[in-house]
Length: 309
Image (cartoon, rainbow, N blue to C red; front, side):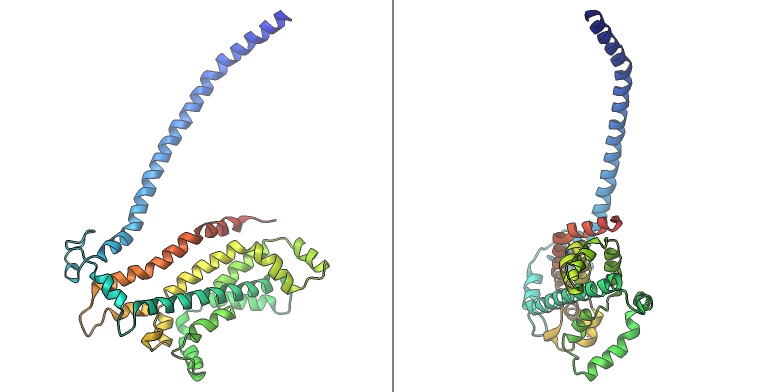
């Protein structure tokens, strides 16, 4: 027993002497190489971050510049910092306070998100789970609307809403959102639903559930990442929309923030650049906050696009 054990110990020592140097060398080189790669990637990403954030940081510091410095001081820091721009913006313009413009934009954006997400989910469920005559033709027609510019349908839509007496109201901006007119979101949700197995649908149907029950209790919880992705983009697009409110809204009391920003720059009089920059920064904050709060759901929605089964 002792001879055998000593022989095993000697064999193990020889194996360690042969393997350890190579393994140690092999372990050190990748660590050193990974360290340099990490450092290079960190520097590159830091440089890209600076490039991306430069306009935002410049915009922030420019809100404290007086009008006299615009065009002469292109640096970050103002020569004579002031908060007069914020005072002007909060007082409003054209007899309308800034909070009114902000409330109009928030109302339009929130209702647009609700209408877009709900109608797009319903249309996507119909295309992905219900077999009916003309399914392929309707789906192709819906995809074809992605190639149709909004400017092509401006005049027919305006004539329609004008005949209905809905001009200078929020209805022309909100009503289409509840009719699944956003083909991009419908297509996104259709592809997401098609990746899901039909086992749970069939089990629910055996238990007597209909389409409404299956859609509300099974499909909606499973496509939550995709719904939040649609909500993020719908909020940003609606918040930044300029052409729609410019076309349908005529009263300053109904103006959202993008239209209110135009009021600070009048071609017939002097432009208040300080107030314009400040109002632009205030209008940008809700979009940044909305994205930061829901960005993890956006990443989840993109990450799960490649999963099946």
